[in-house]
Image (cartoon, rainbow, N blue to C red; front, top):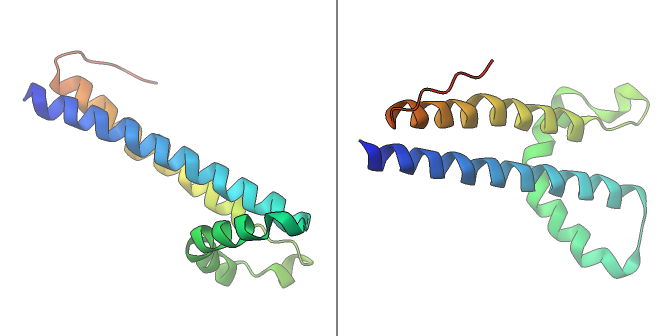
Length: 107
């Protein structure tokens, strides 16, 4: 059981890291959409391909033209990612601690 607990703890840390990196990718994409730097065109294309599958469903729900041209989909995606990070990752971590016999109470 201890091996499974350590596995869950490692998975929770990796998922937290991946979600944090994805938040930063979304932030960099938003910044690059405000300024056009020709030398960073390939970077912006890569960021677009990484983030567009996640951002486009949110744009369908809240289209930018209804908000005066302001695209709030990156903000919504970041909030969803933060919720997932708080809920899923913390739950995995607490469960792993419980399996290891170290109860951790987070409130």
